Length: 303
Image 1 (cartoon, rainbow, N blue to C red):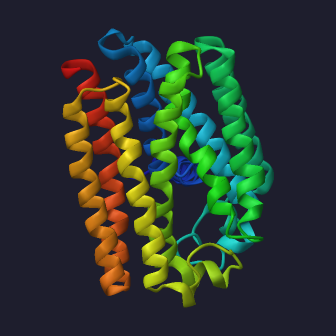
Image 2: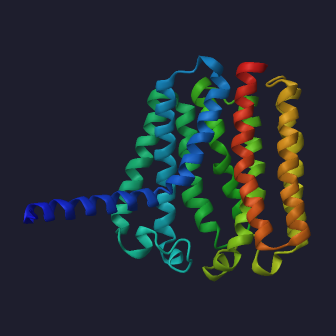
Image 3: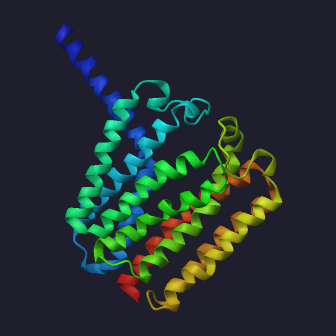
């Protein structure tokens, strides 16, 4: 028998589910999880097999909160531009399903909570790096996207910090190992985001974002620039073996992954179409986690 109480409970449940869905979109949870993964990689790389599971939980939570905060502020600042692009038009702030005040409150609470976790569970340096990552992404990279293509370079800094933060959370020291982890993720972002930019360049241009490549620059010259970043990755990914952070078996796997990534870049150079750009983007998504997992596996079980 259907009662008004049942109908009311069902309606409340639907409202809660819709609200949770909007919070998930606000944090860009899929992208957010990749950031959390990178920070855990940095932590495991430092601790090896002596890691503490509870600390991985705290680090994951802190990373999710800090990144979710940056993403939420990004959506508030870009709400009027998100409406102009198909892939972002359904975001809660852009549609008006969530008010600016609510989005800022939730984002602020997440950011402060994440940084406090890094400070109290780990150390002050990890907390400082988390704060720098949040602030530079939300308040430097985000507005810069409408001013200059240099935004990609600027955004690559907070984008590469998660693995270094993971290392610092474990050790409390910003040592050369952290710089190596940072360098790999930093260089990887250029072919990754240029592939995304290639696919979305028309929408980005329509919304006024000055990101690379522009619609009329989707050509072999741009593809060569993408290939150059992949080539830079080769010596950087071999470096851990050369300085004895990893075994030489790691460099063999790293070279194989780089050749796979390079093939996708060369394919884009030959075809210069969206299908090849999509293959490059997918190759970049496969490349980084496999490389990072192999780094940790080699360091724990082989080196």
